[in-house]
Amino acid sequence: MKGGIFIQPCSWGGTWRLWTGRESDSGYHEKSGYVQAQEQFQNKDLVPLSVETPEKKEVVPFTNYLDKGYRARAVNWRCGKQRTVQPVFGKSGQKFKGIDAKFSGSVASDRSGNEREVNISKRSGFIKAGFKTNMDPRMFEDVWLTWSFQANFMYHQIL
Image (cartoon, rainbow, N blue to C red; front, side, top):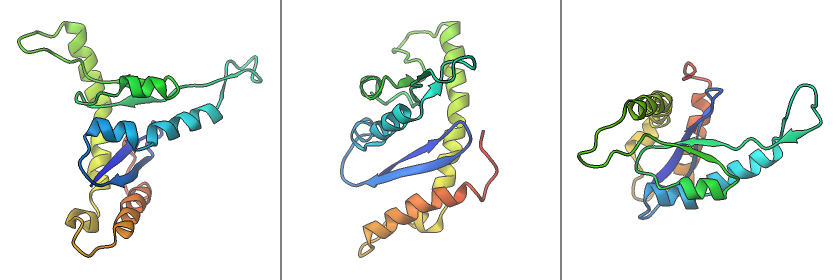
């Protein structure tokens, strides 16, 4: 099973619905629906342009931090012009420029919080044991979704 795991700037972590079958990470990103849900949210959660003119509001697109392997820029842009931040791709035998190394390092630093959320989301003994024959898949998914919600109240903030 494949499921999305996220962390927000306020340190709130969570998971997205599980998928079964053969699907790449990029395919899950494109088809699972969470990018579309983010677009709907950002279009409703308008932000004032300035303190002087609070009645004038704008959409602030989501920013998605992803590993190198994801092919997601086009999907993110189509869904409300969301941004994509990924480490710089180095071609075989090519050296990084100084700015590329700094940028990739900053992305890795930001993503480390997400990696901790991945670890926390998989701490449940029920989830660690994995899906077994004759288990109810809806119950397994319910545990997957609720454990990460509950974990927000059990562990120190990540960011």
